[in-house]
Image 1: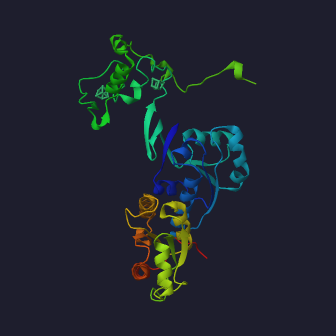
Image 2 (image 1 turned 90 degrees about the vertical axis):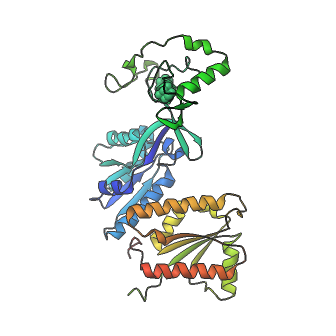
Image 3 (image 1 turned 135 degrees about the horizontal axis):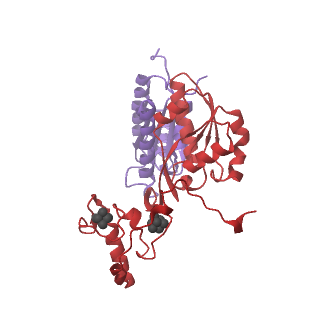
Length: 222
Length: 138
Ligand code: SF4
Ligand code: SF4
């Protein structure tokens, strides 16, 4: 899922300083699960903003709504009526949700209240960690299902580097060495031989190279 | 002006400790039921951040009365409540509202005197702080 984190409230207050009526739009999918922008977080932020603005003697009217997803036209359409009555929208979705609102409601002023941080999973309640860098050309088949791009701090395709010590990465003794994880996993699978295949330099044209990525599937078009 | 000010307090009381002590304090007339708005919860861990924020929108202070650490009927409910109270304090700090307006207290199930003392201290602190400037206007 996409992991996010609420922005500092002062930064958010700065964005909406000139507005007197806003909609805070949450998202009921990824950011709800990572407790950054679901309906509960929307209410808490609304409450904090009200307290802060009352303190400045500049009260504000806040509407709240959290569609199931903020990254699909069908779901954001349900925000239409509220958006039309507000001066601005504070989106608590990931950056994709913010841009979905901008495209769907071109006249609306939309601000981000969440920093989109990475693609990952909740390791346990309250702890999230990165698992994929969306490189566009997955190599998990070669590395025992552990991503060398994001779990090795240097994104090495043929690791480990010389800094791996006692299973930890040289950048921080709290961080697992991704290549140690890959080694251990391949050993468990009886596939250590995989490591004798040198992975060629990665073709990054499927990643951030070449501008915004787009996928078209003719078979899925209506 | 601050002298006349009567803080509006909300107390979330765990029914295994805070509430029993609160009832005892009221029966013994250490505390009067109109001093504070008491909200019964089955465990302090049931209190969500938004409940505290909403109470702050309407009042001057929020106290959470929970079981002593390691005495929670649901094992970790009071620790969860403590973490949520801390997160609210962080938010208050960020927006410049006094974090002392939210406090967590731990007490035994049958300690009316302690409840009254803790509430008194909280009340006096709120009196010193004055009205909650973030409270809903009007
Ligand atoms: S190899 Fe690429 S696509 Fe596969 S998990 Fe890693 S970053 Fe994601
Ligand atoms: S120590 Fe391991 S994870 Fe860290 S940079 Fe070297 S190979 Fe990558």
